[in-house]
Amino acid sequence: MDPLPHPPVRVERRAVDEEESRRANGPDWDRYADEYQATHGEFLGDAGFVWGPEGLTEAVAGVLGPVDGRDVLEVGSGAGQCSRWVADQGGRAVGLDLSHRQLQHSRRLDESTGIAVPSVLATATHLPFRDDAFDVVFSSFGALQFVADIERCVAEVRRVLRPRGRFAFSITHPTRWMFPDDPDEPGLTASQSYWDRTPYVEIDDETGVVAYVEHHRTLGDWVRLLAHQGFLLIDLVEPQWPEDHDRVWGGWSRTRGLITPGTAIFVADLR
Ligand SMILES: C[S@@+](CC[C@H](N)C(=O)[O-])C[C@H]1O[C@@H](n2cnc3c(N)ncnc32)[C@H](O)[C@@H]1O
Image 1 (cartoon, rainbow, N blue to C red):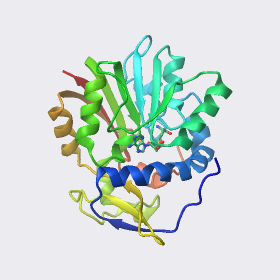
Image 2 (cartoon, rainbow, N blue to C red; image 1 turned 120 degrees about the vertical axis):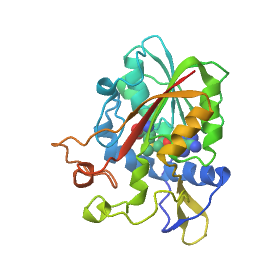
Image 3 (tube, helix red, strand yellow; image 1 turned 135 degrees about the vertical axis):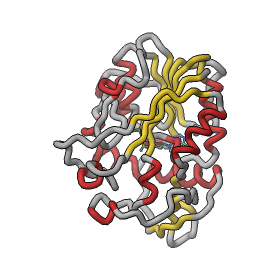
């Protein structure tokens, strides 16, 4: 499949529902997948597990607990790098992603690494698995900030997890939503309300169609959401930017990273 060109877009903050988010983000990730993998693939590692642009690995963080012999689902798995690391540790990893093109990259890496991750094309709000199917569900900057119906998404995670199963996910640190998405100095001056949950939306300039969406929830929203769905929050990891790490990834950079957190990793267990 040849990737479609990115349309010229304008940025807005406005309400967007689940269907509109999904219809925008699937094709957007299809268009962006080749560039994403070309730009970040080496940093991610074909069978590597990093939680975000700071480079914190699961080997160091250890937030999933032991995965050997466990059934593990990755939501928003992209090219499956994290799941491939899980498989390499002895876990039975399965990937799920909304983007066909991302999953084609996953297949490519299955072949080149010899570590195959079975993956399905689906959305985080409708997990195509039976109840109690997994010991661990995780997402590394995967679907959670892309869905509007986050209650449904977390309810689906609860449904497919076994009792006392673990759910861990990384997202853009909620405090980052106060700042312009700029890796340099201007990205250090707060310019909008932390409490404004209005989604970030890119609109195709020619058609007026929503082309990309990200959703913001505050730290309190996440804690409340997890508690409401029967999870016990056991950690909130805020990876510190390493002194010697100088890689820019979108709005993430050393300039901002040494001062303000860019990533939040929530770790919760089903009660
Ligand atoms: C930033 S990438 C992260 C992928 C991978 N975890 C990584 O570290 O490279 C976000 C991924 O989430 C997927 N995604 C977005 N919305 C989704 C949804 N509603 N359901 C499942 N996956 C979704 C995108 O297609 C994309 O592959």
